[in-house]
Length: 568
Image (cartoon, rainbow, N blue to C red; front, side, top):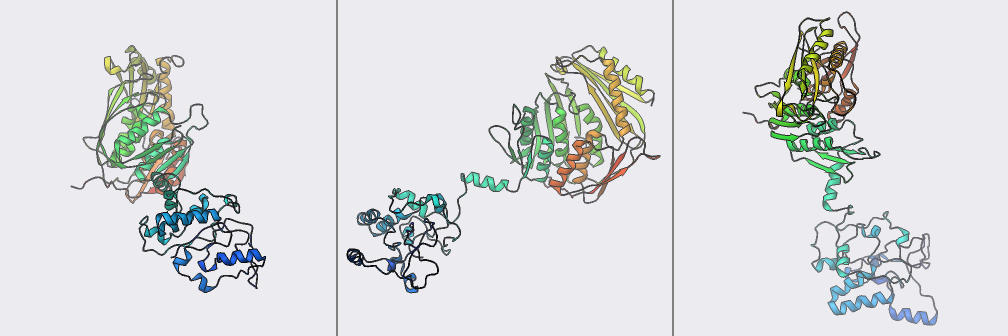
């Protein structure tokens, strides 16, 4: 393609639309910044132009012919857009540069005053002149040159006024603009362009609710997630310490994860890596207990590349999250139903820690499985025994005994097989803060475990709680959980639904009690990340099912396979 001269048209630069005589040449629209291409043969001779101006006669201007448009590239390189397309000053400066720097440099100097300075024009798909390639500033391409699009017009406000003096840009800037690749440049650096391309396929959520659900499902599905407006209107916006600690834990157990947080902490972008596992140690935040982190590890641990062996330090029992005692008594037997079992499957409390000081330590190890078995848990059975754990740290050992007596006074009315252990730790194993609590687990004839727990108020927060009141209230909570019924208690509803989703491509069924709001939102996230929906059947209470209304959940697994596990 020949050289193209770009310049702002004047009032006489475009033929009038609909003219037949070819003598009237006036703009068809008031837009004055449209680039116009003129061959060299249409330029007026300087002597004829001077003679015509002196005599006052009108110089006829004819429309371009086909022979003119097919002129040689060397002629097109010196074309001018009408007699007033460029000023005399810029024309002389271009030829002066040619005399000093050679013919090719002179042509380029002539091109410089006509290069568009508006960003909207410079971002168009402009053809690269041949003399730029001849200078070695850009390697010649085998692809055919692209023509500027007709519809991408620059803004009228950026057009220079006729006869205005335009500042000449440096040579390097003009060459870079002329030799730019034929693509609209993206905002930001190269890393930012790749970042935006990656985020185009990520899930986007708003708010801090269900933070763990989104990150855990993103890790298992391998789909990036972006969470915006994290406490954006709060006095202290952004992620909390326990949420940042959870993100750090995910980074430890994965390989290749990409985590980006803005300066205010209100936006998080998480691109998951591969679940690696291995030996990990993590210090949990003092604002949430170890159960906050352990619940997510139970979902991810079976799909690691190496068996997970993790040591978590922090608070073992509080009033917000499930305690380690409850997860050990209910979640581990549930995982065994899906085939996750072995000698290395263990959850042990090394030290107890109560809020606000913490100081507890927990060891958790889990084997790796390639596939999960489907389950059919439709008959919860009847309660056959109740077990429990009354713990106390940095208080009198008699408090645990008082808790046991008060809770048995209520539970003995329903079943005789009740045994509640006492656990009183001393010294360094008792953590940094005093406290006590009780966790109860009811086991059925079909291997279902229903749990309830209660802990004392943290030191210096709220009113003091009597051990007798705590024992009786915890026993009532267990009776309420038994009334809700189901094959899985309300604490582990989301865990069993996730394992059913990731199971083999077979039908799995489970009977649950009334779904908690946390479980309902978890079902929505499962549909987003794994495109799976559950069949929900309501089972009213009757002769066969005692207690409250039950829900039968049925689904077909997605056939999730642990590709990281080596086959021996």
